Image (cartoon, rainbow, N blue to C red; front, top):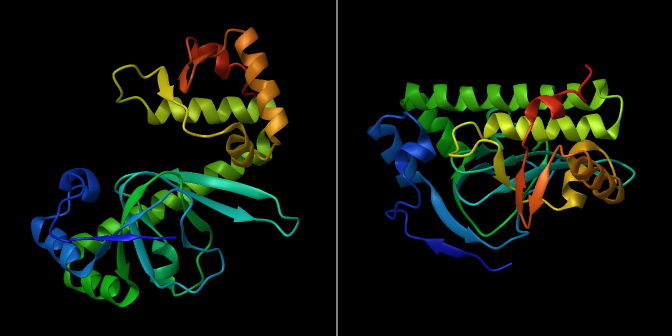
Length: 233
């Protein structure tokens, strides 16, 4: 797939949104060492079990991380957006990438080689802390996903958990009960370990129960308490 290299001097996203509270010196060092590229939808940044080449930082767009079972089934672990570094744990540990990273939409991604990341972490303590925080968040997110899959008794409970989780991530929005549904029913199924048909049936049932409302890609959850009542564990 064709890619387009973007001049590193261009700021593709607000610095504070991409790199959080990193000091200007650390951000400048990252900008100098990184190569930023435009990717189309469906581009694979790295594949599960591949030897780590470096870290990919999302500057614009969304990237899905997934794992594939021996039977060919795919499980989406999470969707990463602006400011998320991908492949950090693999690069720091020197072990293969744990998942496959694929662009969900047109994206701009900064790539930082493994050697450069390690060098900059040694030079900038704040950057080392930033990397550690993201590894910790990824670990906590993975544990939560595993817990939800194992402890949920039914597909309806898994979907309810997923929607409530999206509500929690949407609290800073102007209307926290409303969100854009960027995933297909098949992809939602891959997030909760169910088929596309099951997800479509569940969405229809949730609408009949007035747990959700949907107009196009806009999803509204009018009553969070009612949705949470489906979660037993």
